[in-house]
Length: 110
Picture 1 (tube, rainbow, N blue to C red):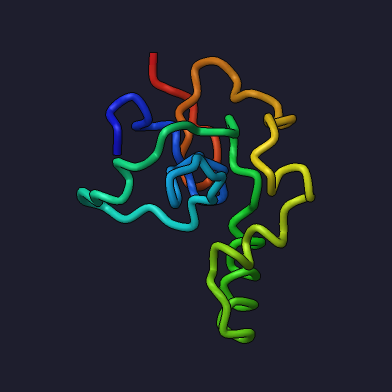
Picture 2: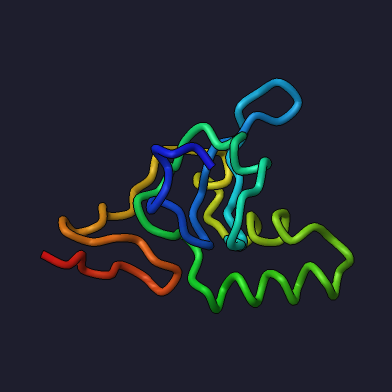
């Protein structure tokens, strides 16, 4: 992932990626340890905090499996229509002194 995005991503967050030559919104559904060249494609983090909770992500994964659809598509259906288009976030920013972890904001030491 681009170095400037480290510590800013968590499952459930909207991001922007190039797709078929145009920037498109996408949803981070999981973060795996180790390098992944696909994360180099990320051009922007659209939300300061995850738009989908872990419970909603799990529900969308189940729905994708049950309907033989892509997990990302099912996750997008759980978002309000404006968020699907990549509209600017209306979510509140993270509090100062926090690092984003999969379970939420964790205060930084010091």
